[in-house]
Every structure is written in structure tokens, then in C-alpha cells.
Length: 52
Image (cartoon, rainbow, N blue to C red; front, side, top):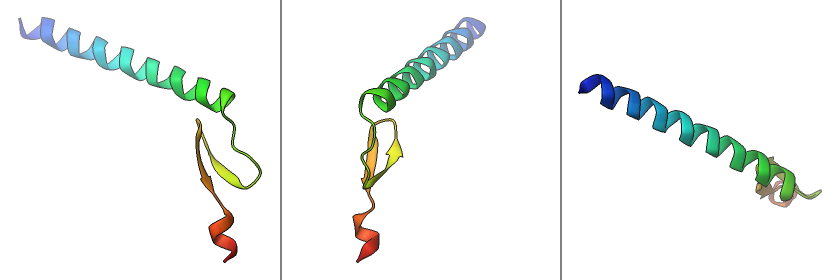
């Protein structure tokens, strides 16, 4: 029974990691950062605060 649970957990982790990677790539392509921002995967941070 323990090996079944181990395999189930490993497969679940691999599937979740693959889906997270696909979501990151899709966000990076669909929502690129603008000129005043840095980041990736649609998670952009403004760089204007550094000029203050």
C-alpha cells in the first residue's frame, strides 16, 4: 500500500509541476512586461521606484 501512495504522490507532483510550467509559459507569452517593468510569467514589477 505504501508503494501505491508513493507512486500516487510522485505522479501528482509531476503533473502539478508540468501544469505550473505551462501556466507560467502562457502568462509570459500573453502578458509580457512593459518598458518600465521587469519580471517574467506575467508577474511584473515596476522599476520606477529605483529612480527616486
